[in-house]
Image 1: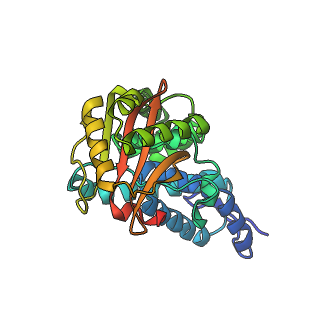
Image 2: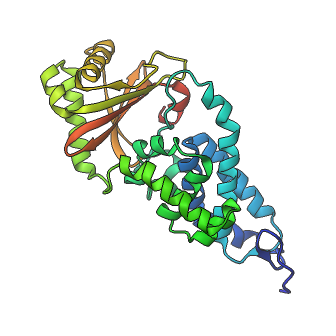
Length: 308
């Protein structure tokens, strides 16, 4: 096969007859593409769109990438940044708190998420991490994901962001300071987390205020997202007593017939509630030193579609 001149995307050679090989390469790096997009946008649907657009660009590119992993990361990062810019106005006008869309993981995750689910575990994709990521600018999110999750070099990240290596180093350092200090450094143990979710759930559903206070950290924060579609606290709720009171109120709303289900979201056990067969609320917990420090209540039906 005769080689051709490299284009600006870093591709060389004749692409004829390479579609099968290109598809294999893409599937081998699909988790990379999805995770970049999901961590940067905080949206499963936006991440799916980025995966699709990245594949279309990859399959249509002339020639064969010299480094498929770097090429796909570059395309995915730029498409994710485009998605962030497109969503900026919607985020500004969003009613109440905006929380990342929960990602089903584990063996029971719906079909298209299986490739990602095997690796989407630990603090790097926790809801707490994603919430903090959304406080960063788009380029900071991309730089942090590429450097700290996938180990890309500063030169490669600089090419993605069309910046200098020195600037990228500063960007990564700033992002780490703002994000890493707010999440546990070590991935939580799933069994311990499941036990903590069970204690939390038991205390809330039985109305045991003292038992509930004992599992909540003094500075616990509850975040909820109803999307302006269903009722939810518009602002974070701070402190043991206020969070406990709100949770007990929700438990009373669900009633004695509530049938909670344990699910795995973002790599950790969580709990989902159904009403008339439809998942209407999921709770994800953040823990430190054995106590619940964060409660994330997703009630926006548009963000719960993948759990139905």
